[in-house]
Every structure is written in structure tokens, then in C-alpha cells.
Image (cartoon, protein in one colour):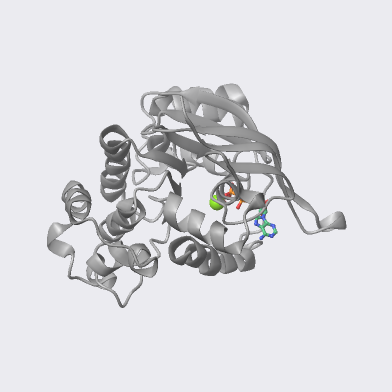
Length: 307
Ligand SMILES: Nc1ncnc2c1ncn2[C@@H]1O[C@H](COP(=O)(O)OP(=O)(O)OP(=O)(O)O)[C@@H](O)[C@H]1O
Ligand SMILES: [Mg+2]
């Protein structure tokens, strides 16, 4: 078993004094090579924070991150940029394609920036598996959301990174497009031996992974292997009970056969969704972290893709 990335005693605090937020609280975590790992948890539990730290996009308040054997904190700017560019791939919820470039140009962009040759055979294989061969000359605005995200997947895979990190990669997609992207991520693990870490709060998405890790208030509180969607839903109902519902009721509701788990379907599923979306975390004002989110959206993807 090879370890692709490792976190030890990883903590991240934002702000100070009474405004201090402990986003991550002493996390020990290993990403196994060739595995598809899902990081789950309610909003605000620290999923994105953990992913950004593991991907060397941000630095911790305390603790260490290793990519392979490399202690990320010991790297100066240039080797850190090279590490992100050469060894890590990213897929974001908002696709983050360059609007003025074609699909083909977007896919090879990180290689172009790094002045590297395109491996045409690998390019063809990825594009073929993703089924976007006939869309390569189109700009992102001429592609569906699912196609745009498949282009972003191809871009992440192009330089054969050690690890691909995805933060809610299917969060902006309808259920059919989400299933296509998730099946592709699964295939890239099974067929290319790709290592993937995906942040999601969605049980269906997480069921594509080999391993599911649950966060709450910045700590890992549970781990499952090969769990089905039903197992994930009932685990979530147990560990993130809804504030206005007893755990037993929540579990009953989740395991009830009548409850649909299709996120696009009727009102029954809305209550299931509420269990894992909102359960566990304290209620937050809708736009409480909008500013930091906006900043994140602008800076992290740029750092991730351009190095
Ligand atoms: N730049 C920041 N400044 C201040 N607080 C932050 C910042 N980024 C995150 N936080 C806080 O840290 C905690 C964890 O945030 P994080 O983004 O990791 O959560 P998450 O699990 O990814 O949530 P979501 O599912 O909503 O994306 C939250 O309380 C959040 O408000
Ligand atoms: Mg997040």
C-alpha cells in the first residue's frame, strides 16, 4: 500500500480572539494510492479546508502535509508551484475553464504553461473515455455543464498527476451529468490507477468512492469502506442528526423504501437532503462567508490550474 498524501495533526484556524473559527482540528489522514476517497460532512465541517491543505493550495495553522514523501511546508515558492502543477490535478465545482479557449486548449493548458509536450496517445484515450471527442473545438459557453466538467476532468488527468482533488465536482450538475462525471472518475481509478480525493456532502456521489471519511466540526468522526448509498444515508442520519428531529425518526425516514434519494425528485427527498446538508453544523446566516468564498473561487482555482 502506497500513501499518496498524508496529514498529521492538521489544524486550520481563521480569525482570532472571539472571532476565531477552528475550521480543522488536529486531523490525521492518509490518502492511499490508487483509491477513490470521498470526504463527507455537513456545510462548514471543514471539507474544503482539508482538501485545500492536502492539495498544498493553503498552509495549515499547525500540523504537516506530505505529498508522497515530500513535506509541503519545506518547499519554497518555485518547487511548491511545480509540485502543484506536476503532481496534483484539480476539479472544481464551478468547472473553472478559460472561456476564450476551446475545449482542446483548456485540456492542454497546464502543459502549455509548463512548456511540456502533449502526449497525443494519452490525450486521445482520455477524450475517448470522456466522450468529448466531437466537442474539442468548442468554447466552454458552447458546451453543456456536464461536458464542461468532463473537459475539466480531462485537464486534471492530462499530466497524470499523483492525486486528483475534486471539491463538489458534481455540485453544479443535473443528476444525469453528475452520474457521467462520477462514472468517469470511477473508471479513471479502475483503469488508469488514478488516485482521487473528492469532497462531497452527497451520499450518491460518495457511493462511487472506495472509502468514505466523515468530518464534523473540523474532525474526522467516522470512516467507511465501499458503502452503498443507503448505508451512507443512514450513517449520516446517525452522525449528523437534524436539530428538529430525533435520531431514530431520522434513520427511519432515511431507510424507509418510499423515500426517494434522487436529488431532483419530489419533496420527500428534501428532508433527506436536509439531514446531510444541514445536520450537525450550527445554523449560519446564508451569506456569512460569501466574501471568503468569492475570494477562494478567484484565487484557488487560478493557483491550482496555472501553478
Ligand atoms: N477564509 C476563511 N475565513 C474565515 N473562515 C473560514 C474561511 N474559510 C472557511 N472558513 C470557516 O471554516 C469552517 C470550515 O469551512 P469549509 O469551507 O472547510 O467547510 P465545508 O465543509 O467545505 O463546507 P461547504 O459544504 O459549505 O462547502 C466554516 O466554519 C467556515 O465558515
Ligand atoms: Mg466546501
